[in-house]
Image (cartoon, rainbow, N blue to C red):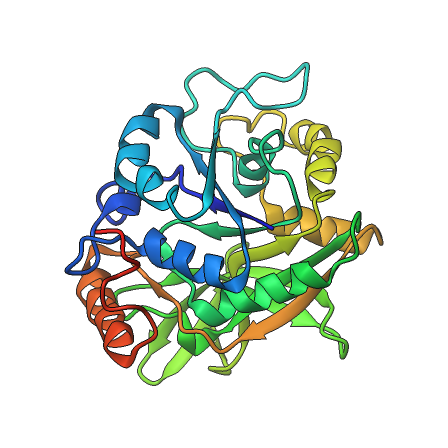
Length: 303
């Protein structure tokens, strides 16, 4: 199984390249914890999706260390990786979105795979859930996807609002819709507001939300390419800021009956650094996990 780590973002709100920001006394990064959890869950290969200009620093700080313990490959997120006949504006800087990001790795991914963000701590149970799902898929499966879903209360920061996908699903835990929303604490309650407009509403703290952790049968790469031209045509005139997002594509495939997406809950607690003020709490939380024995005291034996 492959793990695709989306690591091309610069982390503007955090204030730097947070993928290579040390988060413990052994100078490990959040990404180190993810790779450790993924490997012990059964993933045997990691693909880093990065900006090509960051290859050297990324390889020196992350890749060269983890390559001793798991197979490593690289793919580059580039704005010119679009269908033939299309060309993005030359002055565009912002990435084209998660679906295009995954598409940039189409020639590197060898197997069914999961995706995670490089700067989020997902927790061991989340990787175990993803690995179990992918291992259960018959070889050559098509249209079989899963979202590793978190309880909203386990994904929040006290330092501002966060973006989460609120999940709706049927009695068989098959995803029916994903509503991209802003979430924030208001006292002891969580309130949410859809990104495309609407009112803030209180939601149950155990609502299941998406943290952009999906597991995919490999055919999703073909589906991204198949639907890419239609997306660009629909957004003509907005190529300077439109985003081709994987949740939107998955929703479209579900609606057309071309895929199913299981909602698989995890008890894992997400830790993240959406804002620089989040870092001390994340450092403290990781230290407690080490003290509890969830991670080895030598921090993976790499330092």
